[in-house]
Length: 232
Ligand code: B1M
Image 1 (cartoon, protein in one colour):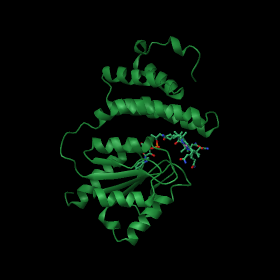
Image 2 (cartoon, rainbow, N blue to C red):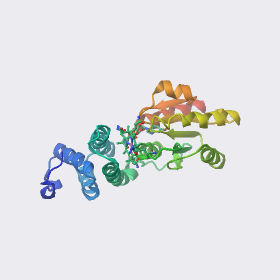
Image 3 (tube, protein in one colour):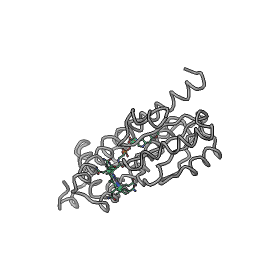
Image 4 (cartoon, helix red, strand yellow):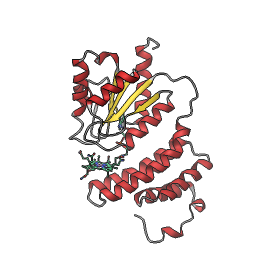
């Protein structure tokens, strides 16, 4: 992966594909400034924000994830990579979320109790904003009381939950079961997502839909809200 010549690389001198590959390396090395610069260069060259996100950032994070899984990278390095990714996402956020119209509705979203992974959930929040939703982000490590208090306070049309650990994903059922118990389950559309989940799991916890990625989450949210309002 990265080498000792990184200091010598002038990002603006690289072609588009080379630059995207260099950004994978820079993400791997947790180099925030380089990620910010690379993101700006690609945008200035006419790349759309979705393309920068997917080809330069998400692909790079995939490599980080593989090496984390294989024991090549450890938590501190992955945290640095995650922070560099966030810098890129912050630049893209307003571009992805450019809508300007009245919000379609509110979404309350959070990563479940015991889980501190938030990159994917943040991406989903950005894409939902881009699709015209107002997003209330509860952050990480969200327990059932926090979810329910937010539903009560904000009266969203959708509740979204994220989990990245096999040990935390069952907590989604705790939240849905509590909603059933309080007879409010059907007042909301419940969407779930996160790398270890699948459609079957979504059904098993009683969600309305499992969303494979942020783009699917935005599409599913729009479709289900329109259906609920009888517009489809
Ligand atoms: Co952790 N971690 N991690 N980690 N981490 C994983 C998830 C893991 C798969 C790595 C591995 O072993 N290969 C593994 C889980 C294994 C398992 O449960 N089967 C793991 C582990 C074990 C751990 C720790 C336990 C490690 C330890 O301490 N020994 C620990 C747990 C801490 C905790 O939560 N209590 C831990 C810690 C961390 C860091 C803090 C270092 C860091 C998180 C930083 C942060 O988020 N701020 C981290 C990271 C970065 C990862 C990996 C490398 C990358 C996750 C990520 O950001 N992906 C991850 C490996 C991997 O997934 N390949 C890993 C990029 C992101 C864009 O994708 O999150 O999948 P993703 O989100 C997608 C979709 O899933 C979907 O849309 C998103 C965008 O397209 N989606 C939703 C997600 N949420 C949604 C919600 C929705 C809809 C769609 O609602 C409607």
